[in-house]
Amino acid sequence: MWLLGTAVLLAVLAGAGSDPSCYGGINKDPLSCSTCDGVCSVDTGCICKNSTKLCVPEVNTCLMNSSACCLPDLSWQPQLACCTVDPYCLSSCLSDEVCKYVNHRPTCSANETFYRSRNYKLTNITRIIECRASNMTMSVGKNLLEFLNYKPSASSLLQPNCTKAVEDIVQGQRVYSFTAPCKIDKCVNTIEKNTSHVTFRNTLLIPASSDSGIVTVNDLSLDFSCTYALNLQSSLLTVFKPVMSSANLNTGNSESKAETTIAAYINPSYTEPLQQEDQQQLSMGSTIYFGVSTNFYDSDFVLRVETCFASPTDDSTSPTKVMLLENGCSSDLGQYIQVFDNGKTKEVRFSLVSFAIQGYDTIYIFCGARLCLNSTGTCSGCLKTRAVIEDTVQLGLGPFSFIGDSSSSGSSTVMSVAFLAASMLAFIFCEINWTI
Ligand SMILES: *[C@@H]1O[C@H](CO)[C@@H](O)[C@H](O)[C@H]1NC(C)=O
Ligand SMILES: *[C@@H]1O[C@H](CO)[C@@H](O)[C@H](O)[C@H]1NC(C)=O
Ligand SMILES: *[C@@H]1O[C@H](CO)[C@@H](O)[C@H](O)[C@H]1NC(C)=O
Ligand SMILES: *[C@@H]1O[C@H](CO)[C@@H](O)[C@H](O)[C@H]1NC(C)=O
Ligand SMILES: *[C@@H]1O[C@H](CO)[C@@H](O)[C@H](O)[C@H]1NC(C)=O
Ligand SMILES: *[C@@H]1O[C@H](CO)[C@@H](O)[C@H](O)[C@H]1NC(C)=O
Ligand SMILES: *[C@@H]1O[C@H](CO)[C@@H](O)[C@H](O)[C@H]1NC(C)=O
Ligand SMILES: *[C@@H]1O[C@H](CO)[C@@H](O)[C@H](O)[C@H]1NC(C)=O
Image 1 (spheres, protein in one colour):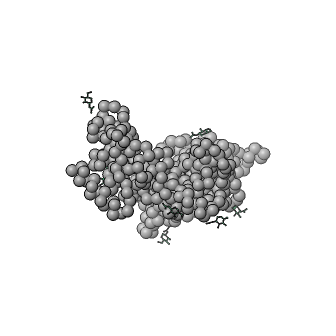
Image 2 (spheres, rainbow, N blue to C red):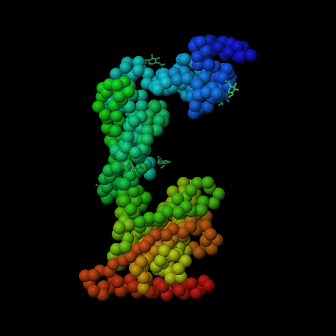
Image 3 (cartoon, rainbow, N blue to C red):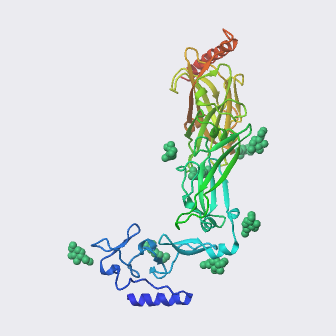
């Protein structure tokens, strides 16, 4: 049976013009696996049962489909179902590659004849930069770099442990890709920021190869960068500790997550996030801008903030509260609290003039947000919809504390804001009584 199977397979391959044959050891060294109860696994290769000796798998005795079960410098040949001396790469190689042994394993690598004939230089190295919302990826052509005696697999960004080389095929070329998060405090990115844009920069360091024992080139460094328009979301990446928090909204039947973030900003264009070191020293009467945004992808849905309130503690169930937004709209008709674009896109903005609740030093902000099916036509506007309460998810932010203007004693700003808070409290208590 065994001989027959081999003969048929060899005949098929002979027709294809190649001449591989199953490796059977030399003078029974190593033993074939069937003579020593050999077992194959991807981790260990094929080894004899009673020893740790490697053995040679035979046709149809080792269903591994991987060169891991062959001895070093042999290749698994799936058509023959055995190991061959000729290099065989299981995934087909690209047009600039040949299959050969690298570190004793069959590997698609640069066809040196091809590269030598084209006289490629460093300037011809492929660099592909991909700028995504939360990270940037630099990909460099593997084969030309290796042909030019670099070792791209050992490349790193400025911070060596930031990311590892990931082999990939991009635009028909074999590349190594390196991904860095776009965030000020990650991977030693340098950032440049002006009023409208932020640029993240990093450098890929590609070492010279010393595999042959001789280093013939200098290490290479390639700079790359991504520029983003500053907006409610991207500006959060440009400060160390923005005042923000996140929660996942209810997505109904969708498997996707709707990660939703609330953050505080100090300017009306939302390009300057409030930083944690400043959140407890806001000047009384200044305006704080809040932005809520979700990454839920489905374009049928928009983000709606139903309610927001301020509470003196981080306990959102505290009975002392000042309503800020109700039924999607400002609780004070826009006098101190303004709401922009609620239920129109995946971002909601509102601002409020900072105030204190009498008798307390701090306030926390809580908002109930939900995804709203835009086609219902009820996502924007001041609508009271009782049915949606269980769909809303609470986002909280705080503590905020305020300092008065010390230069003018008995500041009128503080007075008016205290009055605002008091009048709102009265309003709230009425509302609560009415609800109960
Ligand atoms: C493996 O060892 C057992 C006893 O330890 C022995 O009986 C058996 O014959 C050995 N098998 C081989 C293939 O050497
Ligand atoms: C090995 O490959 C053959 C042909 O591609 C397939 O039929 C078989 O299921 C594979 N075996 C394993 C263990 O993956
Ligand atoms: C390698 O490149 C040379 C020159 O372009 C070409 O003739 C040869 O066929 C290539 N080898 C393989 C295995 O593709
Ligand atoms: C390689 O780079 C040189 C110099 O930039 C250029 O003149 C040449 O056309 C490039 N070769 C290829 C095949 O792109
Ligand atoms: C980079 O960002 C994309 C989408 O923004 C995400 O799918 C991917 O997982 C991120 N990659 C890394 C390594 O963080
Ligand atoms: C990376 O290396 C830096 C400096 O060597 C170290 O401070 C940091 O903790 C490391 N990070 C990780 C994730 O290992
Ligand atoms: C900000 O930087 C971007 C990108 O570098 C540039 O295109 C833009 O003109 C700059 N804007 C200002 C106002 O300097
Ligand atoms: C929501 O629907 C309105 C009209 O029904 C439409 O004008 C608007 O563009 C839609 N918004 C989104 C984000 O699809």
